Image (tube, rainbow, N blue to C red):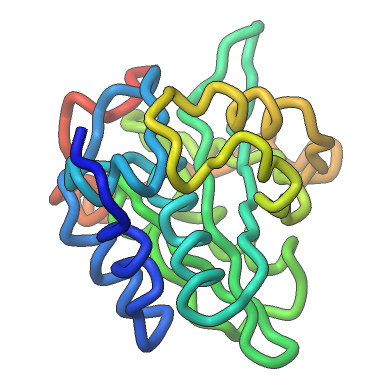
Length: 211
């Protein structure tokens, strides 16, 4: 692992949030869902999945713009004790009173969101139609309120070379709110063939959840 503070200089060098998104889009996708790398490791290894990308983006928002490093965790439907897709984690940012999101994704429409949303729930709902598994089932069901990474500063989450199990455990432990009222999930349509093609066009097959 390389040493030095080049990653800190880079994290503080962005001029706009969308530049951060463009950087995330240029990274290879990490299909290993059991590895959770810090921004330092992402910078050196040039590979990330959604949690790693969200943490990288949150660190960049903090160091480049002085914003709070905020994550939102989204959860899929759990059917008969089994999740129907992977979790998705985004970095939330603010512009004035409005919210946007930065995201590393293996499914194209689950990426960047412009800062035009009023509440975290409204922001999360913008992902609903596109949060489907490879069978086309729309499975987004729960979300967390923004989690501030400063709450786990003792773990040195920007620079650690250890696996960030501590972050995953923290995200799993916080309260998640239901998105749908009772009965809403019944009869949801399956994503169309064309939409699935667009969604997974640039995906890494090894990183796709198989329901």
